[in-house]
Amino acid sequence: MPPKFGTSGLRGLVTELTSDLVASHVRAFIHACPVGTGLFVARDLRPSSSDIAEMVIAAARAEGLDVTDCGAVPTPALALASMGAAASAIMVTGSHIPADRNGLKFYVPGGEIGKVDEAAILAGLGRDSSNKTGTASKNTTCGADYVARNVDAYGDALRGRTIGVYSHSAVGRDLLLDIVSGLGAKVVELGRSEIFIPVDTEAVDPAIRAQLKVWAKDYALDAIVSTDGDGDRPLLTNEHGEVIVGDILGQITGSLLGADVAVTPVSSNTGAEALFGTVKRTRIGSPFVIAGMKEVGGRVVGYEANGGFLLGFAANGPAGTLPPLMTRDAVLPFVAPLVAATEGMSALVASQPLRFTAADRLKEVPTEKSLALVAQFDTSQRKRADFLALFNGEEASVDRTDGLRIMLVDGRIVHLRASGNAPELRFYTEAGTIAAARDMLTVGLEGLRHRLA
Image (cartoon, rainbow, N blue to C red; front, side, top):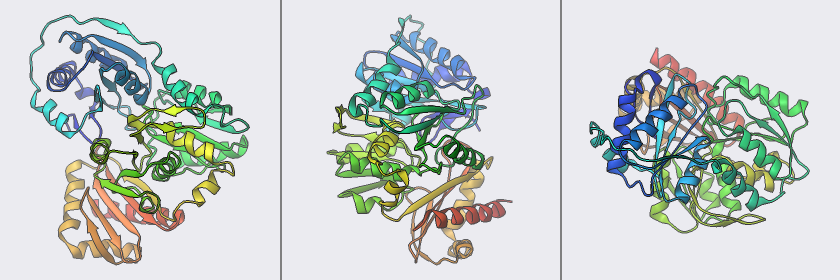
């Protein structure tokens, strides 16, 4: 499958992200979208990212743009720096997908691009190079500024806690260590890897889940924190090493910050409706969440089931102000809950509305095959009923906002959709207990696997 725009940026196989293809997309972006004072560039730690970043920098300079290289830093750190300089940005990352794939995330001076911008970029492909020579410089404070954003707002609010940091191959791993220690906690680093590990915070691998529980027990940890590869999706466990799903983190964080409105995709649990005055549901993907946040305005936050959190207003931390950051952030949605969890993360999660989601995917399923299966369910109530029989459930209604989300008579939910980033079939469940949601996930994935065979 050739590289294409998915739910967040351009993605494709590394072998297909050629210098010509990358340069064509960079040129199209520069001429189709506002770029402000120049272009900031950063990259994650997968093996191909440095070379692709050099392609981006060369193409942008050839259009006469002044380019600032921020090095290897998380996506939200890059966005914080570029927006502060009224500049555009490109992050070289494949996020949570395997190392044989990579991609580009584009930012205009006001934040992450939307779907209209994507269409404009695609329409502008094929433009010849301008053969100019823009300047090149480096930003060496980008990471430190991101650390300061969090520490300045929360001070030493985690003093007395012992927090594990699962470093793996996350680009922001050293910054995570600085943030957690800067907040006053005792830090235990875990699992640093020089080999890229595709950590999907929305569908954490069973082996990783098991290891997190072992670490939590062995080191008597209050929690474990981590992120995906480019640092815009959080991973947080409770004191037992059990992963807390991202939409729970989002609703807790939004509530703690005093948001009146939450914008979140249809895949997030329905507990949000009990916590916020207004909830706007969108399709899956940060561009849709950002568009929804801009539409409603006010004291608005956005979050996704993967945990990525967007702050749309100036909020107050215990030690200072948190300015808005209209891109997915992985740090705020674990810092705010940890600070509030004086009785432990388990107790804080138990205080939330009793709605829980689980999510995973079937890998290496061609997109056209996933779309065909979703279409079959969409057009045939009999096939939907046959699938729902796996859960001893009966259909109450269907939501087609993004894929096929089926509400059962007893309040449970099953949701399937083709991934926008990789050849995967995504499956989500919602129930009144974590165990029930996970049981439905296991049964549903096996049923989908059988139907795809």
